[in-house]
Length: 150
Image 1 (cartoon, rainbow, N blue to C red):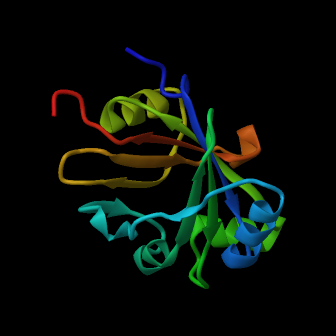
Image 2: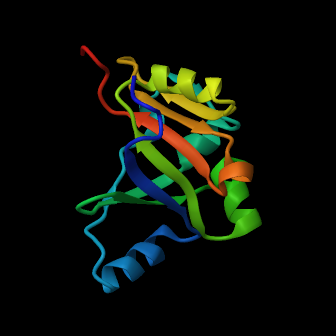
């Protein structure tokens, strides 16, 4: 079984103004950026604030070896908003690609990582945020875009 933190996928940066930040990155040659699809696709969603989660704005830039994400939270008390208000703009989470979201979550919780937020689509792909900021300096995340056997 693959370790849940073996394959780096992305870095997520929380920002106050996603348009301004995207323009800055583009001005220094980092782009192109695309909007991440609406987050309403998760049939199972465990989040401190579901409206806050659905209000998150994301933009992504696929570089040759890693994806960069910009995240602008709304006013609701999401982990992203709390990070932005307490620490300012910067890396919120480090995301890892896994083949199976549920198996990775089981492995990570067995390692002692409490779940902060999670979401699953009908096909069982999705994400899990772990409450790791105190130990790791950032939140860790696992995500699966394909479910084994589907």
